[in-house]
Amino acid sequence: MPAPNTTIWRYMDFWKFISMLESNALFFSNAAILDDPYEASLTKAGIERRKREFPQFSEEIKNKIAILRKNSGVNCWHVCEYENMAMWNTYIRSWPGVVVKTSVERLQECFKVNATRPNIPNSLTAHTVQPKVDFGLVNYIDFNETKDDQIEGLAPLFNKRINYSYEVEFRAAFNDRVLWNRSGDPWVSNSYLPGLAVEVNLETLLMEVHGSPSHNKFDYEIDLIKDILKRYGLNPDIAFRSELDMDPYF
Image (cartoon, rainbow, N blue to C red; front, side, top):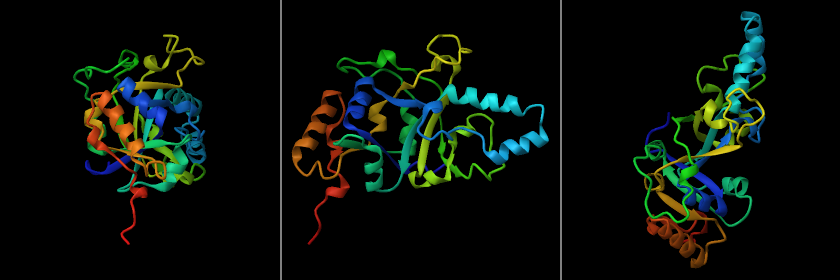
């Protein structure tokens, strides 16, 4: 686990930022439908090892992992002291976008929601959930060669292919069979939700909000972000231009 004051960032399209404020929540994507099909899966070497050591349990273990994936969600952050242009280009699908800056400690604390923030217009908080959330750095591994792929608890949710190591990801994750099943029957395998909103305290979470680079050289974008933050009862002074748009010193 990184130090509590470690800086982390979440890059998002502008509409996702509005959705976060509107729902007073962070969105967790279902682990079974993430872009990388290796997410929360077993390694080739690990499967072969278990076939040798526990032949009677190998299929049972694979089924266990499949169920874990369908009943789990993840929320992803980039670990870095500064804004990262590669992350802007990777995660902003429609410009302009924003990046939320926070710390590991603030992310952990923001899920301790004591009361819903008042005066939220058209709040979607009634549609959010409050499960027990775990946290950790993502382990980037070779899914062909790694033999010791841990399968206890939520450990598989924190493994990712080594090809994605540039993401330097800190992840929040939770598992709940009932919450993820839209039919109400936790044993139905084809009716899982693509994502769930988990209620948070945004005042605790948000350290800063930066506008996207090359789109906020004019004050109107930052003014808009400030106005939106104020509308949702949040401090408008946490909105800033992108670090990448700062003027040179000469």
